Length: 138
Image (cartoon, rainbow, N blue to C red; front, top):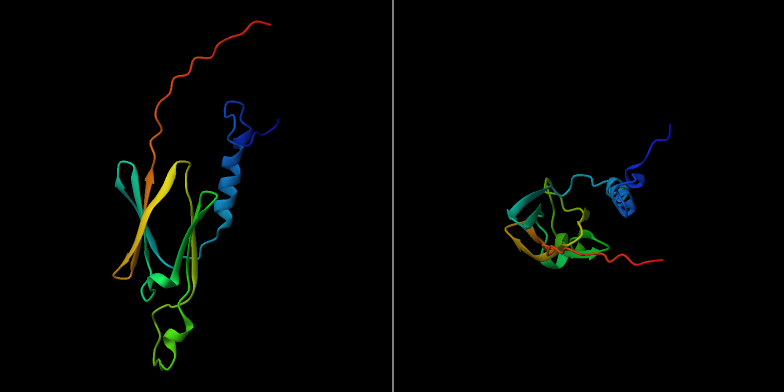
């Protein structure tokens, strides 16, 4: 008996990219820093909130490439220059956090306030199209 993979199912035509997408997401291996929330902000809107205390907007880069939202943070090295820490419990390490976006989901904006980075996403609602296919002879 042959086991069908998800993308090879005969009723799911053109979904082979979905299997690659699942594999790519599994390989992202985020380590849990920085912590984040994902919430639904409206019927077609979402918000990702990352706790990035100590990072300035210039320390954070947000990019979208091939439906992958990538957030990278690296604090300037001169920020700790001349400071002597007796205890350092606030994480200041660089981070990289990625999210795979569904087809039609776009970044609507991002803002940094009170140590929280908010990234708003919106899903475009495709219009419903009924298409009649003409049958030709021979």
